[in-house]
Length: 241
Image 1 (cartoon, rainbow, N blue to C red):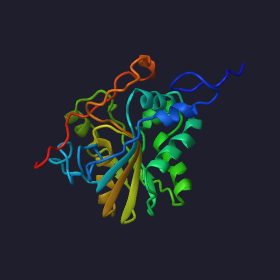
Image 2: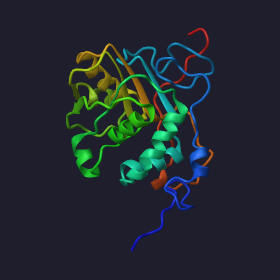
Image 3: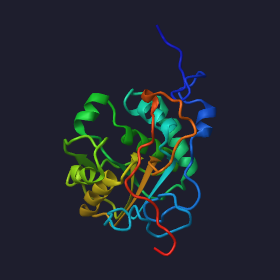
Image 4: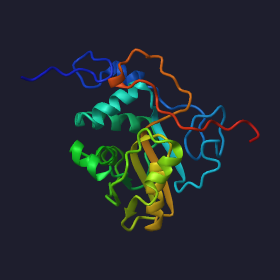
């Protein structure tokens, strides 16, 4: 029996992501930290979230805030294997961010998680973006088996991915694609591996970004659909700091 499709966010409609929910996803607009892409009250070069960190990527940008609606979408795509969501996710990124004239690579999933899921979400996103942006997708990174990042404190997140990635020879400039930027630890570790393999500048593009203190105006989604937004442990830069 073939069950009818329902929107993964609102449960209505006949599409996996209905037009209403797609339009309502919270875009990341307005002033941002030049380095890590954290929303700020005014443009800053480095914010409190990244100012004391030695980051290996030059800049990071995301399309949407990782609130409960976006979490429901990402969970359906990654954990439930609804791969037909990839084109919609890629279009949201391409509509929100300028197309880079650079090759793309992606953050590989933990090998055990990739085996369980049967697909590699960041790889699929990078491939779809490469088509939309008219550039090439390169498979450069490998990842060792480790603990899951989800639920770990910030310090443990950083330690958990330190040295987890190895890279083949990289072009001098490259864009690193992932699904969600939470603390930045994973993309930083992957960018470091790319720089050890020859990259001089690594830019990060993700579909979503966790934002500290952001609360959704849609609190009635079930826990399975998302719940509270994941946040980092730092805030934003104040004027003069």
